[in-house]
Image (tube, rainbow, N blue to C red; front, side, top):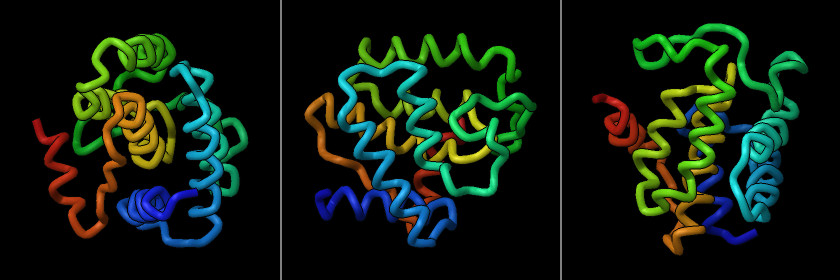
Length: 155
């Protein structure tokens, strides 16, 4: 794995205050899997989440599965959990329609907030997968600049 990829994963974890070596190792496994995928699908998103969250303190039916509960994200109620599968179908289809629109697509993923935990880390991996497919460099969101990143979601 390239040094810039490890740095991106380390910073992505740090944005969420996750600093342990095991979480970084799982992030590397999830990224390696994701980079090898040619197309985006719900299955790819779910498998990426399952790999990333393998050793996290979640129930087994929360690792690699869409949430089945309501959540609040940034002071707003997330979409109802029963709408997540269809919202993710649309999200995956749109990954190919607007490859240069990676930022807005990432924001939409975070608005859907399909998982109980790990949405930010998975979302940043998916965003960078899209960037690579669009022949753009990896974008590492630094923990020290997370406030700028959170402004993406302010509107």
